[in-house]
Image (tube, rainbow, N blue to C red; front, side, top):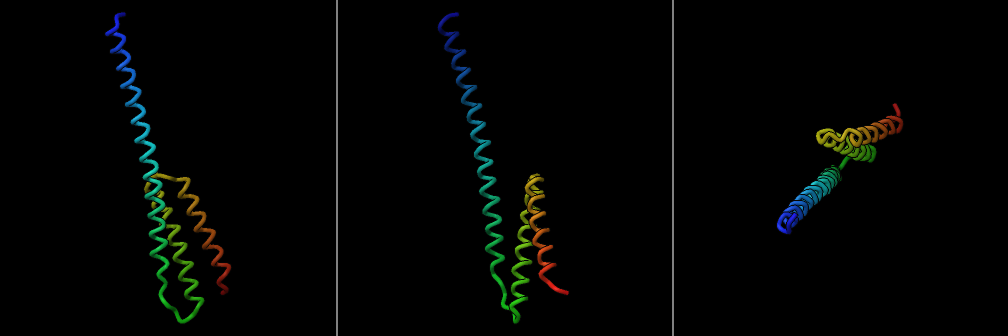
Length: 109
């Protein structure tokens, strides 16, 4: 093998390695951006749900806040289902279910 052939092979290997590295970095960046967008979306819904109207009874205000919290969790689960993240959405649904069951115990019939 002459020097030119070795240089061509080396250039091809370096170019392939750089392309693979670039592709893996882009995948990691897209995962990071996806996590950031998910977190910011849930924070925005939390901020919107903090605007509580005034009620005559304190218990009605507490019920409204609690319902908003359950609704927010279920919206996050729905968003995770749309992104095909089944395990995380199951966890959010279970969290909402626990909240729902605890309010049923809290409210006396």
